[in-house]
Length: 473
Image: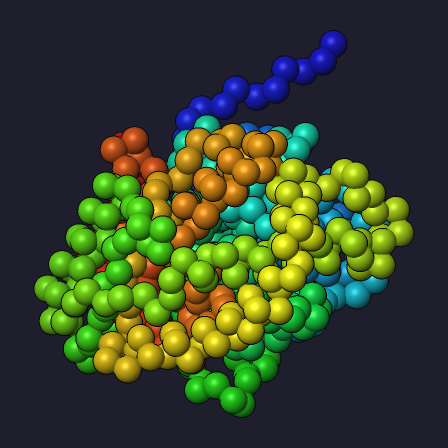
């Protein structure tokens, strides 16, 4: 007799009366330091929570036999349980990059970035899911069950760090690894009501694949439920390695007293934004003005040519993944099993191959154009996405490619600019749809200026505390 699948309530969370409670990572690390709880107790609680909700959310890629607790009990976040995204090597676990085209063998060693991540003292309890090669803005698959949004399980939780977002938002862990090559930290943060900061290029140790890109547009980071957790992680990561070519961040404790000039962007390059998203950004602008900042409209430094150029580069990455799959991923890699989006992007690039040199040339000029936008402003405020998180299926890789591409380019209309420019940006959960789905707002800063982003994020969090899924009415 087969067991029927669990029923799916619209809202799913794991918060309860256990060792994790509803604490953030900073609070839990403090409880471990003073002996109130142990790292093992927190790991056990996270595993129990995961077993309770993951059959509904499908956010976990794989788990180790036992939690991996930092052996030397050091690091500012020692003892706090976490997940690492399944595009980062972790000794003893496979790295499948969300693909159905191969089944990876366990990695023989930790990846370069995994070492920095775990140096913070976090306890690794598993790997989180992502869409194939991180190319999509939703964590959906050709045949496998999608990763679901804890706020409403019939909606997308974003991507590519969708598994991490679902696990943090639902309360399984307070912090999880994410990385961002076109919005993959900020998009799921917006969809799941989280804090998601994309750091400056090279702020952290680069992952192995990012180092091989023609334009390195990937930044490593975390998804959290509080600004102070993000700030604490960035400071702890600097204790392991700090890029001497970037200004240090240090530990940012709260808002600053500075009054800033903030540019406001509402319409995307494609000229669209939905009413709920627009209203949330306008409300945030009023909060900033109330705090004494000067907010004024500003134009984007790019045109629709940027969309075409980014698409060409996106296609190049898909072609590289497919055509080198047997060398890069596994000798058994089957290109016939890659998903519809990857196949479509590869075909698009092959059909427009002659455009690639020009696209790369123009994209490499973006950092200078972006810097010009900050000649008169310290920050730029905008939406994260052009509309609120869609229902599952809307941007699934099973959708006809031409239709899917149109939907994606209209949806992911703000975040890729920071990836090409290499600059920091943060998504903050400052709005909610009438249906109870989170809406994120986007703040961008000049190269190397994560500190200002965190200071303003602290102030906005204090003025309008972020919604909590387990207290939702």
